[in-house]
Length: 79
Picture 1 (cartoon, rainbow, N blue to C red):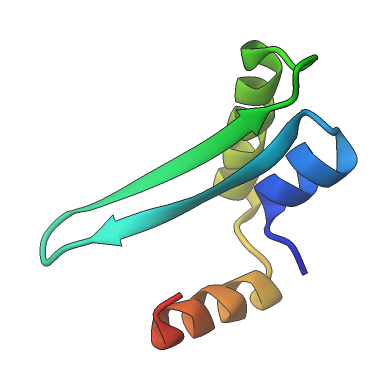
Picture 2 (picture 1 turned 90 degrees about the vertical axis):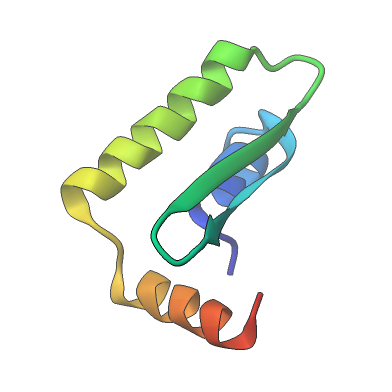
């Protein structure tokens, strides 16, 4: 089961050949990053809008229980 951004950008919209993200957490701060490798026909603005829309969706609706479980398991397993 693919994460939101790869599923949307790679599989559904075919705007990227690779997309994903990750995070770094330290004792008092953290950082989150996202990456996208565009197809030859994709425009940066299209990809940025999809990412921004998905972030807005998570801010307003949150994540599903399944997504939260997957994230927790990834932290436990170090992936």
